[in-house]
Image (cartoon, rainbow, N blue to C red; front, side):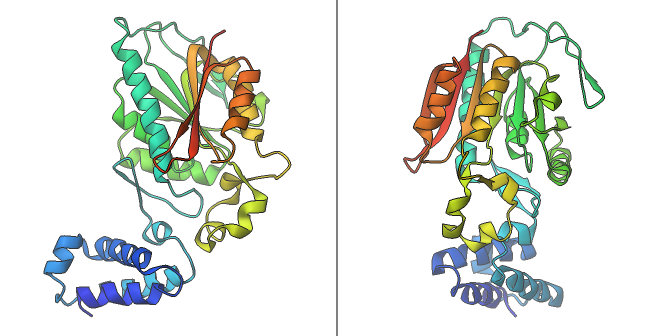
Length: 312
């Protein structure tokens, strides 16, 4: 099997379940991961005969893909904010719209830091969480919290792209935290990972105050599951995707209350949302007394993000 034959083997096998363009994109990702050849190199070396182990891997990966397994899980890799991250069935695959959320947070913090002649901020007191004592100094870095960190993509991207910040990340899933810690180690960033359930105030009450809270919580009503692709519903973790039909705004309501107790004055909450729920999510934060509640559209023109500022 040559490089070109390997590409066409994958693409042609996948065309019954994906359109040709998507099948071609997946085939290109697999070939690049296995051979190390990007598109230009693949075209220049299309007649190159692949080693037997690479041909076997191509066939095995194609079998996995035909079971509707997402290519990111098959390859164990997803790119987010320019970073290669490990992903498996225990975490959501990072999406491009979440990169837009990260850029909003990062841009606002950069603007805030540029406008502050003294970067020191009032310190937190000592607090204890899961037996761990968390302390800060009188002159500290801005604090960011990522709720429902999953693969750690948001927390890691913010830590990598921002100067002088301290990042906390929590998740209810021990398996997800294992993935997030693996990615943080690979990207050489220090993040405080915590095993906590945001729906249980008894667990989160002792967290410190933050300058920014960011989250991509579960927000897809279960009734929409039947309309979604099998590669999502059959493989990605349901607890990170779906909410009950009768309470689709549960996480936003809980985060709104949490933020009032854990934001410094003028601190902000940044959230990814369902494209149909912009007005509803905004209303939750307005009712809780937040100021400057903003709904932002993504690059597709859909309402996908909300920012809310809180002043005590």
